[in-house]
Image 1: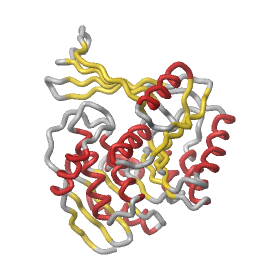
Image 2: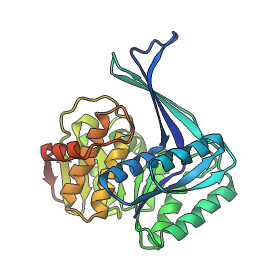
Image 3: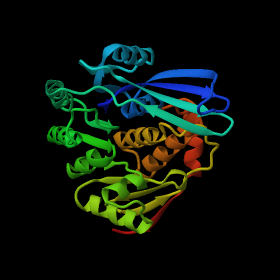
Length: 312
């Protein structure tokens, strides 16, 4: 069993238009609606891969009820904690003609102290029976920037492992709790280092430092340039396969799903890394968020090469 946690759940609504006319009238040609938030997308990918998965997080109001219905429709078990506020809607507009994606993201509800304590207690009990967790996405209002660090400490105390995918102070503080794996992109690492841009050398140095401090797998995603992986065995660079990109929203989550599946299945590390990149790439080939095709994942894995840059 793998549990994904989404503290700021959402309804992901995707509108497709022929060509987005900002300030004008746009007619929608297709609509899709899914339970959203980064951890939800990770769960979808894990389900496609054949893993036993369930989801936790917060959900409130009419949108919260809809999120539960959408998960039930997908047959993904959920243990979402009810909150007094209204869960958010995240709108993605796909401009088919210009191949552009526009996102409109609501901030979501404010979480009370009592609601957060309910989450901490739930994770404490859940991590006694589940050994793999994905902690993904932004923090809702009301939570401290140490929220992920608190969850990681609880998970570790019960002998379980966490993969963290967040940004800003939530990521910075989460890293200090030494999760089993992290998946920042180059911009998120640059922000942690107080820079607007970052070189590959600086990425390698940061990754090496995180591993030295106790993180087993540092996965630095580079978009169409692939990814850099740092672990106890060294520094590695992987290419990204050539694809026709339709919608990159959710590709980072698909990457986490592929990685977590491989780690939980005790795959060879290089295979888990290739699966992560392939899942992220396949997700970008479709309009749906958090969708992969298993056959295409296997095909792309054959196209991915991982080169060792240097030893640690």
